[in-house]
Amino acid sequence: MSVPYELIYWKGVPGRGEHIRLCLEESGTPYADTAALENGNDIVLPYILDSYHGDKTNPPYYAPPFLKHGDLILSQTGNILMYLGPKIGLAPSTGNGLYQINALALTALDGLNQEVHDCHHPICHDLLYEDQKEESIRRSKNWVKNRLPKHLGFWEKVLASEASGEGPWLYGGSLTYADLVLFQCLDGTQYAFPRAMDAAKKSGKYDRVFRLYEAVKARPRISAYLASEKRQKYSIGIYRYYPEMDVVAE
Image 1 (tube, rainbow, N blue to C red):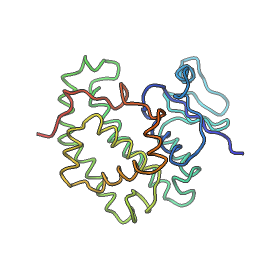
Image 2: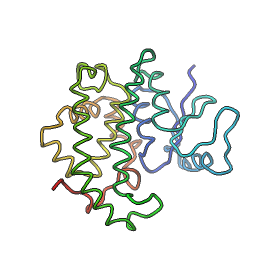
Image 3: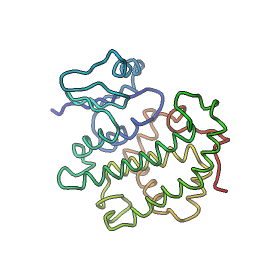
């Protein structure tokens, strides 16, 4: 009997834990999820307190998500995905493909996850959005004009490359965890910047990118998950919607 996986992440927002959750859902892997528990946040919090020092093999952790598998507790989304991918059929277990897939996942997390977050918190994380609203609007206008086309153009190039293979996927002609990461990043960016993303889709410049998005969304397990109560709504996490930031490139 396999050792169960436990995803340890905040209740109330999809956040960085969603990338891991999508992989577990797509693969049909049984897992426990603190976000599904009423007291889920009470389970997460002790791992990041100053009083937590880890144990003989697990160091202290900076921030969730965490994946617990037996006695092993891993942090960092990209690290967790690289560990999990080969075990659940979303990355090869031999050869160099795993590292290429992980590089693609990390690129998506850098550009369409962290950069989008920094649009509503451009000065520092400790200030409220309202305390940096003017700077947020300025950054959002610049990001939509300059960075969003750069990111979408890169993914269009990847999908047109020989390494992408047949079909709508990023690498090797089959679905990997990098595709699920990119899907979630696109979905969150669509929520935060719907006007800019709609314009990008209508432009016809990034047809392969949006084809991948729709292909992931249509997969039976993903479709069922997205329609379920397990899929948490965007709110005050990485991806936020503020009408004044919903701009299009000038």
